[in-house]
Structures are given as structure tokens and as C-alpha cells.
Length: 170
Image (cartoon, rainbow, N blue to C red):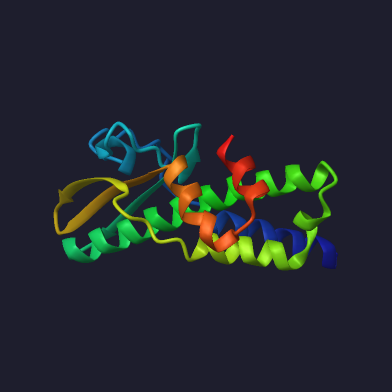
């Protein structure tokens, strides 16, 4: 009996919480997404990439103030660029360690490598910025690229390891 009463109360509660209108699918086509207005070189699922020629970081910042959005977007793109360089440097380090070079497994080398990449200062990176204004917001898309050769040269003095630098240059 108790179970029947509880079941009836539960069913009544569920029914009272359900919508009275028929659910319909919203077919509005007038909405836009960030990718609809983004430049062709921007992909929201890619924040950084590397190839044989360069490292690249991408970012999008949205703010009411265009200069704030610009500054944030450039900072994020630069951090993503550093991530791309760091990822590549780690792949090189791991490859050398796997070849039996124990120097590249030491915590001292790894910390020095991470700090070197984090503190890298770029001179004249290739910067592309696109500004889209919608209502009262500013969307700033940015791409910052740095050649592989220049990145390796920037790291050369702080890492001070010819074998590693040569491996990064290949």
C-alpha cells in the first residue's frame, strides 16, 4: 500500500514537472557562431601548430573594448605559440633520451628547457590580426608565427647544448 502511494506521488510529481506545450525544434537560421565570421585561417579547434618552417599560435578574444580584446588575443596567441615550440622541444628531448642519451632525462635539463621556452622573447614575429565588431562586442582573431630557424636560434644561448640544438634544427 505504501509503495503504491509513493509510486502515485512520484508519477504525479513527474507529470506536473513536464511541459504542457509540445516540444518543437528551434529552426532559427539567423544566428551566427564564432566560426561564421572568423577569417579563413582561423579554426576554433586549433590553438597551435608546427611544421618544418614555423611554429604558430592562434587565439580569439572577445571584449566590449577593442584594445582590451586585441591585447588579450595577442597574449593568448603568443602563449599558444610558445606551447607549440615547447611541444616540439619536448618531442626532440624525448627522442634523444630514448636514444640512450641520459643527459636529456635529467630534471635539470628539463627545467632549463621549459624555462627557456617560457622566457623566449620574439623579435618581429609574423602577426595577423582580424577585427570583427558585432553589436557592442569586439572579436579579435590573431595568429602569431615564428620561423623554426629563429626559434631555435633564440633557444640556443639559454639551452647551451649543441646536440640538442642540432636535433631541433633537423
